[in-house]
Amino acid sequence: MIDHGLPVFVAVLMGLATAVPLIWLSWKIPQQILADTHLRPALEWSDPAIRGLHWQDALLVLLVCLCAIGVVMQWGAGVTAWTAFFYCAVLLLLARIDARTRLLPDILTLPLLWLGLLWNAAGMGELPLEQAVWGAAAGYIALWLPCALIARVWGRQMMGHGDFKLSASIGAWLGCFGLPFVWLIASSFSLLVALIANRFFGRRLRNPMPFGPGLALGGILMLFFDWSESFF
Image (cartoon, rainbow, N blue to C red; front, side, top):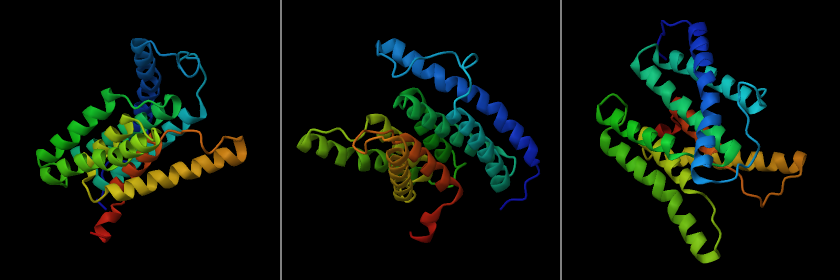
């Protein structure tokens, strides 16, 4: 733990200030995608400045603030801390968009992937570039390959390409060794949410559900608690 100089309340203020544009982007980016592709929205859209906060938006604010506090307590108030905060903020934004629309926009996943590679290539991250590249490749291929085989044999699409790209982006930041734990957390979280939705809201277990929030949760937890060091 680094002895941070920035007070925690300043980190909270930073989290609150960041959460506001994140909520706005979580509405505007899907709106633009749906408008450009002439897709019919899954729900009726309204401006978030007029529409009341959804409970998931309130949860987003809380998680952004917790991430801001976490990076300050773990890395101080330097460039590394705010780069880690940016990584967490983008993951939370992607999780919110996926939960609402089942979309993981390339406009967010691909820059996150490249920034992870460039961050480590510049020697500012904890990974050598080679591990970051292999992490990105493994993040994509390890999810895409079994899903492609299942789709070919049984004709059922298990995941979208956005999930593969998000997994690759997380791999670019965390490397290969952290990815199995990210997938384990994501799968456990998604299963738990599905069981709760089935038990209390009557949602059928066979209905597809977004995997992005679970991946985002795993990517953030592995940033703060790198359990892979204990195994590899």
